[in-house]
Image (cartoon, rainbow, N blue to C red):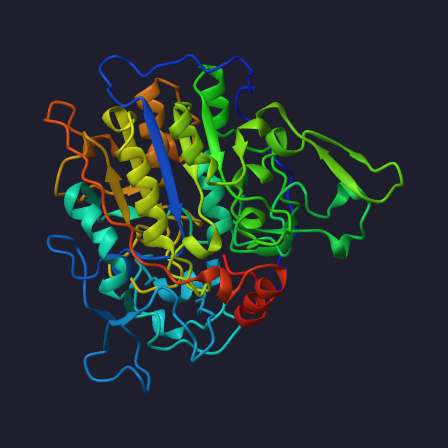
Length: 493
């Protein structure tokens, strides 16, 4: 995986904020004026708004994008968007193409002017690979998902509410997104924040680090970005206690929650989604408040925190919760790589997975009081035409799709309100009366204006599950995952 040159020194870490986790069984209920009793947050992977919804009626989209003068960008300096399959095969190989969606890649694509306003005209200057370590991508990022494959997403957007001003909070990639959806921040100190992805898996407290006496150069590191522009590649071991999470607020008010994700441990069906997208594995008080060495020495084992029981593995246990009547107040539902929409997965299982989850909720007793929030974690390097406001040195990132599915979501509506990841957390807090984390949840506009609690509730109409490639035979198991990593030049994330 590509590493950047360290440009500065690490600064002192800020103290932990937030309240402690409890173990009391969840008995809370939403305020009477709020009929939403369950919130399901589905986080898919690496798609910009235009990449999923280019041409959607009434939404701010485009079918061509600005580019800087180059041999492939002449005349009007606009490139027409082309269709691309979710699996985005490379020739005959069943392996997708990833695009640069690092903090550096964001800066190239944004191409801010002297007034610090993004021009969104540098997408043709990035490279393939999750950190831009492969060949030039040129016109490839100017693309939308083939309509045959994105149709299930369009159907949901037409039935419920589509938000066309939802921005990724940060200017980096998936690791950061999976922290932001839990905490609303990746700020480590007053002048530094996490950025990009760790250099090894798992991306959390289980990785090699100072706790198990490894050599410094064998640690798992998360890069840091400083306010003055410095970038430190070996910034921090990814086991954080510098910020509180939604788990702290939910525990304090006795609301139940679960984080549904696959295991990070290698096995016959290993696809490393749990090794990279389990955000709670990087939260010290949940994943590893203490640890111990094996009796034989050498190997380090995390002693899990009290809340680790809420990290539910595998992700399909979400369906068991519905069938058993134990759906928690708040659920995070994280896909496997095959079902994630990730460009480097070589698979098209995302629409199938989303349809399966939505149908499960919609056909159950939970439909009448549930909100499903479907988002994509970052833009994945794909072109988008709406420039994000540059609020701080780490935010905002590019626009991503969000569809809100609920009996109380305004039917067939498009919200033009500006949101970011903190907007989702703020809605959860308001809905259950949790108080605030005091991060971007406090400064962002809640997505509450998407709901109309006085309307006649939307009737759920089950959708047909779309066809999906037999991805298990395309690449299953550690050896095939390594093939994907080799093709991508790093861990696709």
